[in-house]
Length: 75
Image 1 (cartoon, one colour):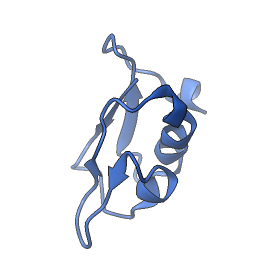
Image 2 (image 1 turned 135 degrees about the vertical axis):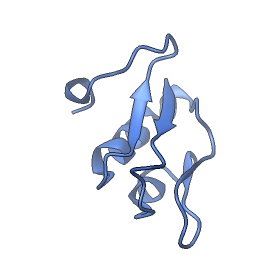
Image 3 (image 1 turned 180 degrees about the vertical axis):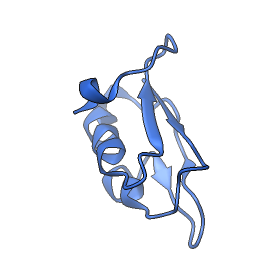
C-alpha cells in the first residue's frame, strides 16, 4: 500500500491527521504532509478512514505495483 496526495485539492482540513496521525500531519494553515507514504498493513484501516473522510478527496491509496485502488474498493 502507498498513500498519495493531490496537493491541488488539499485544503488543510486535517481529517486525515485525526484518523491516521502516524501517517499524516497538517501544519497550522498548511496542507497535508505524508509522514509515511508506505505505512504498515496494521495501519490500513486508519489510512482507509483518512481517505474516506477527506472532505476534498485529496488522498488516494495505491498498491505497491502502482495500480490505483478504486474508490469502490475503498468504500
